[in-house]
Figure 1 (tube, rainbow, N blue to C red):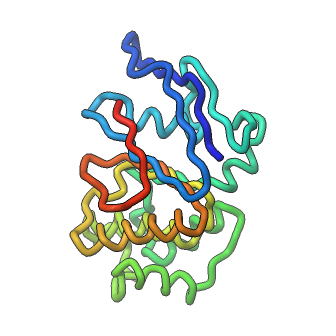
Figure 2 (cartoon, helix red, strand yellow):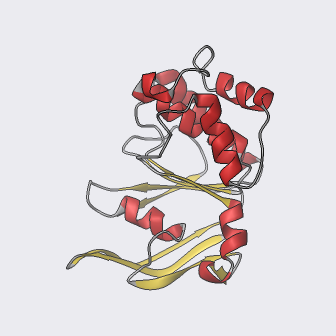
Length: 201
């Protein structure tokens, strides 16, 4: 379970939000909404420990995330809105590189299967710099299937995706939560997925 207690966020002299409480259990997902500049990305970064809140605490399985850093990071996958893919590497090499950073190894067959599932058949050996914005986004989202994390934290995951890719990602989130996973995501659009809760900043 991920929980946040009395979270506040300040940028410069501006308070973006305060006294925010959140709890997400296995099988649940949360949609964070709000206008630009309200702190959606800041909240996600606080939830995964990349930024410190001005007040409050984030807990994983009841323990402060700074006290269980290794296990929390092992259970969490954060994909930012401007998620990094290495432009000089191919889509295949990006997945293998990410796996190596996580201390694992993915064989080529497993990587190809995931990339094909994300509609990148025939593009897996192209340097990422030659791919469209939507294809680059799909390379990044492929990590959802190559790294088995319990908690997905996704910042604007539907950006630059076509209708078919949006439907595929929605199903992926549904399958993840149906299997007991958790997801927190931001999106400017409605998400056609049952069982979620919405937080508006």
